[in-house]
Image (tube, rainbow, N blue to C red; front, side, top):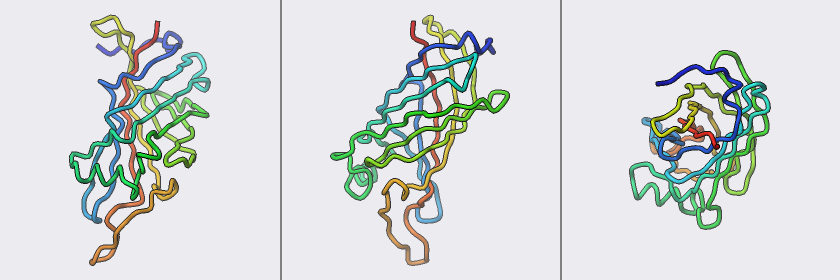
Length: 185
């Protein structure tokens, strides 16, 4: 059962629970449909300050070989030198630099996203979904977030022109975060 606690009680260190978290993305394909994917292997931490949310931090490390779009051929292409070059750049990282309370359950976290060795700022809008103690005694918090990037800004420029105009893969990528994190003792 989700409860709405006093935010000060949430202060502490949390570990992102990969079994109950999804780090996903959506890209437009062939100008007509969306292809969705996710990363299956990642780790991360949150440092929440319920009394002063601006002092909260987040850190995320994603194993790029764990990309899953439901198509082994496409996943292999995404791992290749055309896209993520996972042999050379095995990890994508996010390190927060600023957190803001926007009012209600809405927050914004800004940080450095590193892909292919290139670091650029990323702002993620988050909604606090609540906090609860699970049946195993773990104190959990949940957040849902979204952001958009232009993949070309990180050097992800591979594409193919379509006969009818346009390109095979959109430059704009939508990122989604469904995060469950467990408070450390």
